[in-house]
Length: 166
Image 1 (cartoon, one colour):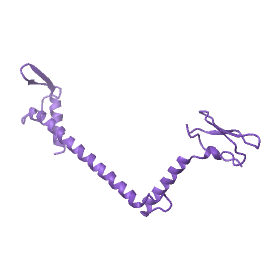
Image 2 (tube, helix red, strand yellow):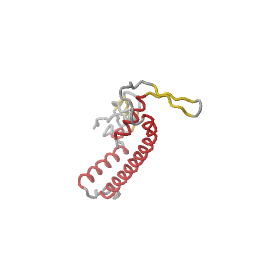
Image 3 (cartoon, rainbow, N blue to C red):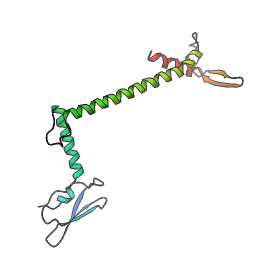
Image 4 (tube, one colour):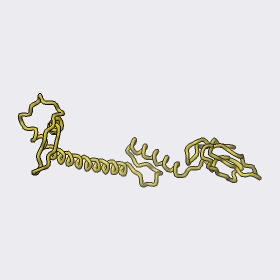
């Protein structure tokens, strides 16, 4: 009996039999793309060794067990007794805690960035002239000799950004 060969475990391309084994010759399976080759002493069930993927099979079994656990919310018998609905729920809760921590760090960063924009909003002043073009340069002095040229549009964008989430 000859099995249909799975794709190459290395490059995921098609594989084929180079030779079908007999009592006097080995079976040879080879990838048509990368040339990966497996020579076995299979006289029956040709292709069985090429198609054996223990890691892939274990991952597929784990995936099926997870699907069952999520759908039924019950312990999954026969799955190393370690994966249960409570473990899946615990993992989900840890993920939620991680997301909460990430959200809190983003909120803290948002506060810092808003504080950094406030001086630009203040520099625009209360009575800003909306008739002036955004590309109008505004010169700001720092110390005695250093001038920074910003555009009026930069200050307006800072004010808009501050006003969006207040």
